Amino acid sequence: MESTFRGRDVISIRDFSREELEYIFDVADEMESIYRSGTDVLRGKILASLFFEPSTRTRLSFETAMIKLGGGVVGFAEPDISSVKKGENLADTVRVVESYADVIVLRHPLEGAARLAAEYVNIPVINAGSGAEEHPTQALLDIYTIRRELGRVDSLNIGILGDLRYGRTVHSLCIGLTNYDVKLFLISPELLRLRREFLEEVKKKVEVVETDRLERVIDKLDVLYVTRIQKERFADLAEYEKVRGAYRVDLDILQRAKESLIVMHPLPRVEEIDPEVDYTPHARYFDQVRYGVLVRMSLLKLILSG
Ligand code: NCD
Image (cartoon, rainbow, N blue to C red):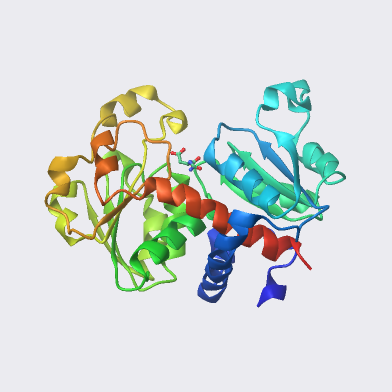
């Protein structure tokens, strides 16, 4: 199995079979002890993180993962101070970076950006978010969190709440979960529903229930994955104002949930989870951050070692 990962791009969660997902998670389990002590398996390797959009977690998580494995990191998080500001196009930027690095981690506002970059270079490209389209490594860490916290992914009722239209983490997570035997509850205001053609794709593989009211389904859920409204992706801010504050998870609603329910969120959160929820046994969003480093260590090791 190990050799199927070497040198591979990670553009979409669709790139992975269930067996491959499980293998990445098994290796992530092994990373727990390496995370504490560090290792030098990737000594001499360099990760370039190219972030054309804001990020805290994803960039720092990849960089931490690389450093823990003994590798080095270069890159930019402010394209305004790189040559992009002078008008350099993405293809040129990645072709230049290829001379410095062994792997590129790219976040870009345009859908298809990671795939395009991968066509121009021979080193692996990892998609760290491409517009509203995909965020495959977030889906990996989300599914890993469910596996770690609940011991399995199969036969769970998983609710995904919020901006299903523009949320790239939602898109990757839905597709990733189609590898498992789950029931999906898609909960959002009408305006933020999953795109129809995308919904059809998901429905072919797993059972889906759509609703605009969390109250109607909260008691059935094993996982509630909450997302932020992606304000920056609205072409018309008046549309955003219509849905702003349309949902919020608080102690009140959680009273109706299973005791074992876990609440997840890719972060950053804005108003959609009351901070009081942080102190309940349901909250798992900060654990996700920790698991994210293990999953990215696993992925980098599999792609770059050997
Ligand atoms: C997400 C993203 O960038 O898509 N953040 C993340 O990577 N954890 C979610 C978001 O911005 O809402």
